[in-house]
Image (cartoon, rainbow, N blue to C red; front, top):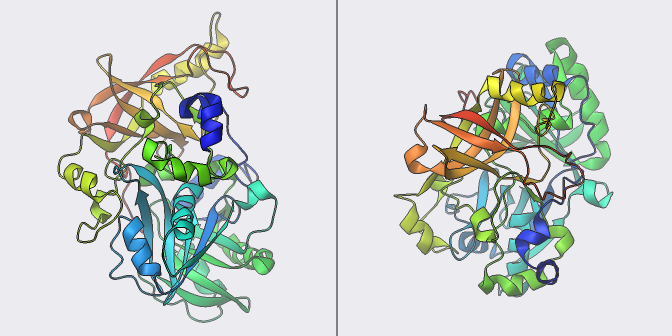
Amino acid sequence: MEEAAQAAGSPVDLMRDLGVGKFTKVPDEITHWIEEQRSWRETCAFADQSYHMTDHYVEGPDAVDFYSEYGVNNFETSEPGKAKQLVVANPNGYFIGDAILFHLDDDEFLSVGGAAAHNWLQYHIETGDYDVSGEIQPRPVATGEDPNNFRFQVQGPEAIKIMEEVTDEPLPEIGFFNFEPASIGGHDVNLLRHGMAGEPGFEFWGPYEYGDEVKDIVLDAGEEYGIRHLGAESYQTPNKILGWIPLVVPAIFEEELQDYREWLDVGQGLLSIGGSFESDDITDYYFTPTELGYGHIINFDQDFVGKEPLEKEVGDPDREKVTLVWNDEDVIDVFASLFSEGETYKFMEFPHPRSSACQYNKVLKDGNHVGVSTEQGYIYNQRELLSLAVVDTEYSDPGTEVSLIWGEPEDNTNPKVERHAQTEIRATVAPSPYSEDNR
């Protein structure tokens, strides 16, 4: 990574306008994305998460101490059968990445998520003095290899009824973010009580070789309940209402992290930047865990990397995560521009318009830059186009009127983006999460 950034001239030059890589092996649509979105609210949605995330296996007697040093979370209560959102920061308190951490056995852990957190942790396993071992399985869609595990999720009002039908024994009573072993069609799985759209559900996983059989059992049982298999596009939209930002620029480009960048394979650590926000300083693309909404899970009773700057920030953050509700008329104007003479605005692919892995659109208040909008998506259930944004705290109150700039800079070189003019879209600040959490 260090060599690639030096050759490009800067980290921003390296990452800007690379486009979007293949997300998953799952088709963009299985039926229609609107029906797929409706399913998590009305019936049950089925998601295949087997291909787009990295897995990190960590084992050894120092595992808990290791996580306590590099994660901001509290690990004192961690025990087999519990999961948590693992968040890691750099020494200056900036966010590197997150993942879901499963405590499998006394000294055995599995985390599942984006590569950024796993690369950082694996580096410290290999270069530090810990009695632990670690192994990363890269994103299967990127390598073309089969994953170790299938990973499925069901969520929605009918999800629990469906799982009661497909498990070979009575469905266990499991607390939120806890998991237990179960059996489906004679195959052992782990059931995690979870949900990604604010609705009740389960995530479950097991050896990949019998994943198709388990999937068929669940989909067949769910047919009478109206289950829908989510395509890749609809799958990527519910985080807008749940308030989770999946991809931001990892804070790994400070001078003191050069050794890490020299260790890091550029193919495993490179993300693309796009959107209307521009800066030559890569740190302007950074966030802190607090700004991303993780302040409530930071455990200041333990020493961890990034503790001191986060301790100073958490009581009085400069910025806060919010939901932006885009103005309907302004969104319609984007499409209307295609039917009139003159320049057109950047085309919006529904339901998940984006042209880069890390989307950064400029947020304005009375013409002044007050934040950045990241993930955006149209949600049929709300009949709204929403995005997640980090804005200056004084503009974070629900109901505040702001605007955002839609479109790429004029010198954009992303081959997947057509020629267009930028436009200003009005938006209203709303809470994050955006909808009631029924999980």
